[in-house]
Amino acid sequence: MSQPSFDLELDDAGVLTYSVGELADAVNGALRRSFTDGVWVRGEIQGWSVRGPHAYFRLVEDTAEGKAAINVQFFAPAQARLKPLLLKNRLRLADGLKVRIFGHLDFFAPSGQLGLKMSGIDPRFTLGELSLQRDDVVRRLVASGLYDRNRGRRVPPAPLRVGVVTSVASAAWADFVHEIERSTLAFQLRVVDVRVQGEWAVTEVTAGVRTLGRHRDLDVVVVIRGGGSRSELATFDHEAIATAIALSPLPVFTGLGHEIDRAVADEVAHSALKTPTACAAALVEHVQAFQQRCELAWGTIERRAERSLGAAGNEVADVAHGIRHRVVAAVERADERLAQRGHRVRVGAGRVVERADTRLTAAAAAVGRVPQRLEPEVRHLDAVAQRVRLLDPVHTMARGWSITRTATGHTVRDAAQLHAGDEIVTTFANGTARSRVEETRS
Image (cartoon, rainbow, N blue to C red; front, side, top):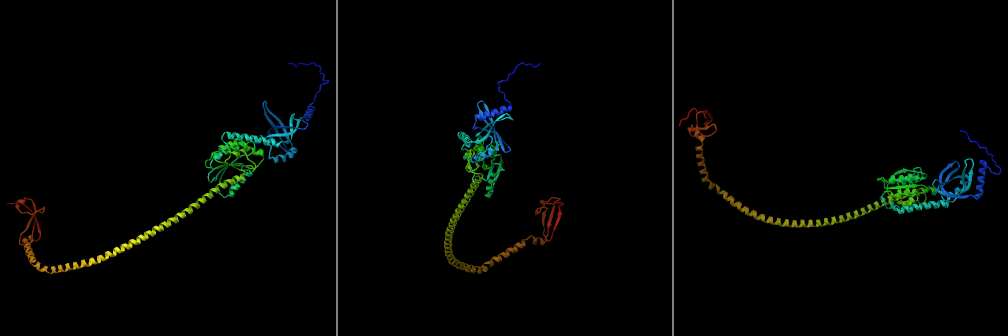
């Protein structure tokens, strides 16, 4: 395919044509004429970048047609001039900060970009924007019922188990630990190391508060950071951090910045202290107060115990005295009764002995007459004994008689009792004889 040819006669006479460099100069001239004294511009800082002594960022605004942006150069001389103003108002430029800045427009020919050379700033605008944002967050928290929720959490009498959300590389953590260790109390610290400023600070602090809130072996959660610019401390005005603190099942103590600072996180926390050191001191005071209450209670118990023991001792002494008195009286009465009974025994015993002696004398006399009465009986007994001896089988057998018994020991009195073959035993005066029956006759 061939290129078309244009056989035209071009006449540039009277038409202004710029080179690129000339156009850039013309644009800059027009900008200086239109914005002779410079221009104020407001927007949000994005893409903050420090390169050498200079800083660069974009100033951005969301409009109905979309996003509008302009590049800003913040050169070292301007930074040096504005540093005292920023420090006085405790501001530090960073991403997300809304600012109203002053500068001069400049078209940079090498890149073909329009930029603003920053030379001034209105800190009141930024502080006002931060305050408005903060007030909006507070209003939403109040409307949702979260503003006072964490203040309703009960702090244990001795909050010794403490979860801490902070940067462990910061002076805030060092100050907090120093105050805790100086108390010599048995605190147990569990720390979640987070960024407390910058792009990821809100996400990490929020996650740290939620993580520690799920631990049932903790008593309180502490959120601390050291001092800084108001723009840096604005991290703790974020609604996500405030919501996490409000919803924490554990009471949350905060110690953020310096004494003049108060963030939204402080507003919703159970206890808001001015500094990390003050936060640690408040925990120490809680535990020391509990310790003092325990000591006072122990002292009260000891005094009441001493009074009770004293009263009981007195009661025991009174009872013992009463028992002693009654025992002595009872012993005395028993002694009197014993003496009376002893006297009656002595008198009665004498009479009994006299009567017994009389009876004994009579019995002795009667015994003396017994031999005379027994002589006839003795003679009678002797005669009976003689007859018994005469009837004894032994004497009969001595005269030649014998006794015959069966093998079972029965006495044989009749021959009819025996049969041929029976075994019999014959007893003589001296000895026995065993024999067998061959024949019986009646």
